[in-house]
Length: 136
Image (cartoon, rainbow, N blue to C red; front, side, top):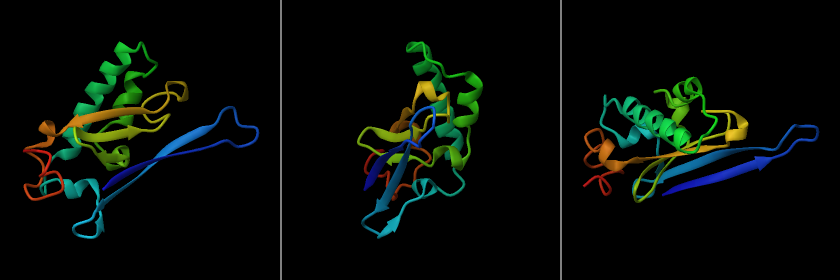
């Protein structure tokens, strides 16, 4: 079960409101909260694969929308670290990654989203793990 919450607020005197995503990924069958690493084989370079896909997709989205996502912000905010990929959910079509405002671009560009197709993760995922039903 994957749930994404959008949390927002405004503080008196601030230039603008702010918001962020909070996710819960729960393995109902085993009764535990899932970490991103739980989806993949031990030692798999999943962060590198997700990061490479996300960076390429964010750059394409930015170019198509004539957006304000500087390349250096994309590269650092979607680089291969766990911290950059805390907001993920499982969908029918792929691993959804939510990047909060400021993570991969300025506030005015807003939050960004990337959907990593399961085919991209097939060789890295645990054969009997949570992605098994999606990566056939």
